[in-house]
Length: 241
Image 1 (cartoon, rainbow, N blue to C red):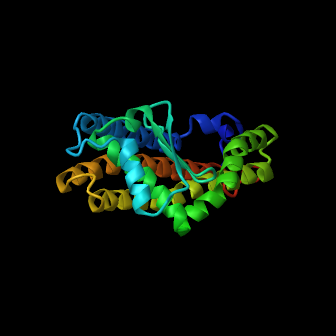
Image 2: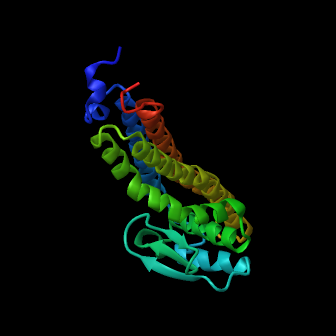
């Protein structure tokens, strides 16, 4: 027997599957706290070579024969990223001029993405191709799901919304090997180019490992959310059966 609350458009906000969302949120918060804690710790450890994040990035790119990537400063904390479209490596205020182990490690990680781009690393190419699909899904998935609920449980709209949300989750999953590979490249490049000593490279691995947890937590949260949507709406028709 189907109880009455299945017909309420607000059921999805208080049903037991909400624990899946709570679990995802907790994982994300823990991962964020971890990366901030580790970055703060190793931001206070100066590299023995005294090389800044920007200087380390220049040396790494030159060592890989990459001469067409600009290095720029970007405002914010941990806003570092590699812009493959414009071939720009952007380092945050806390990384660009800092000679800390953490800053050099983050700069090297972004260089890892530049190397991936130069060498046509397949997961990076796939992730780049998924960007417009993921952006589209992120923008429209929830409005379609909510519209489907409000329009007498329109299953078509709900399922289209779930499919679009699945594209977002797929993007998050493809991101994982890209990030892990960039971190692995970073550690090797720092050691090979004499930018950090071996014991400092171990510290960098701790910083980048903590950062990777944020991507893992994000993907886990996305999977849990998708699972919740499938539990709530999968196979349900307008009559609630």
